Image (cartoon, rainbow, N blue to C red; front, side, top):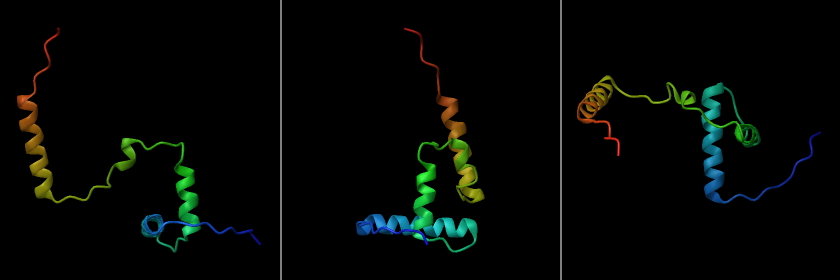
Length: 85
């Protein structure tokens, strides 16, 4: 049997850890304990997050996408490279 330890967490930390466990549960489609969520967070330490890890994580409508593209297009029209000093 695995030895267990008691750890005190603030209510805020417990709530955030529970949210992470819930997100993992949705992703893995199976129950996830707080212990497993903690282990998951520990494995992330030192790995760093790459921008490509976020691909597909933003759920937006076609209307929002069109607005974002139009806004970027307009911003690029106004952008000028700084003059060398």
